[in-house]
Image 1 (tube, rainbow, N blue to C red):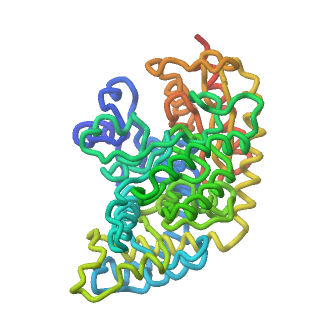
Image 2 (cartoon, helix red, strand yellow):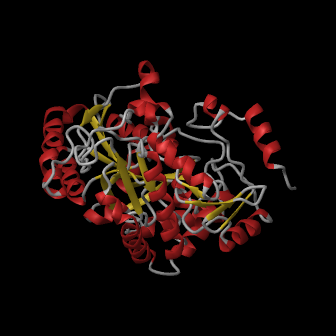
Length: 456
């Protein structure tokens, strides 16, 4: 069924409360109608095309409506749409669990499924605390989080996020984590990396704060939670693998769990299948979502090991069961989409392909390193971020109210590119099927947009 673009926008604004949006903005900022997807592109009812440079909030790996994923989902729909997972099981969830256990780092052999990334983080937090309580240490009720981190919008996940923009309004409802300075290797944030200091040296210095926190508080800490290598919603803040390696060693030394939130960075986004592989470590809990289904359906998983699983494994009368559930836990359709995504991941060396695309993208925007209103270009895998600043070399930030990044977004839409910024950080996180020619075109649009956004 075809829709008029104007009619679709009017009806949406009448009833849909759009996420992460001040709805009043849409009195002057056009809402973008989309009717279909094709590869790396989104297409409106009027035929206007937008290159999805942010992978529809970091979910889409292989393009919209990938034929293999679509075919597998149609086949599954002819067989089984949904069945509760409590007391029942089905082939897609069994096969997916087996395949995830085979490809994830270390000995992560157990899968607890949820509907979204925030809920997967909730599982990890609850399971970690519950594990310690069952092992005679109920006082372990605290979590360590990094400054600038973001782990989701449900109350537990939001509590261990320290990005004030999302968290501050709900502070009275939240538990208070121990917040440790992130090893942010950017140059814009206070306490960030000083010019001339290497990423690794900076990370080692900052890790001293984590070491001190664990030494002082480890008896009351259940787990440390981190986004390995990239803090995405916090402004695409990046840090090197050495910090992750040091953290794993310290968590072992002080007997604290490590939760790796790879919801945004898993499945090759950093240039390896999982970001933890850069440090050759395995977490105690691994949270995955977004790219898990190739950007088709909502699905998330919290994976853990046999040691933690066995703590909850006992006679019913002991009350040790982990009583966490969602109505659509392990839905067959979503699991099938994930299985099809894993099929595609096995078809070629996607990590190498992603690293190559990342190198090409950096070359396409490298001229911005000399721009008077660009403080920094940083990159990890196929994620590249550009910080806009009033005085680029001096790293003086633009006032947030000027919304310079939003001007780049508007310019992108006018020219057919979806470049939704994070404040005044313009970033690229495209699907892996984008071509080098499309990257060059996208970079050109972004450069023009940055010139326009910083002209006055």
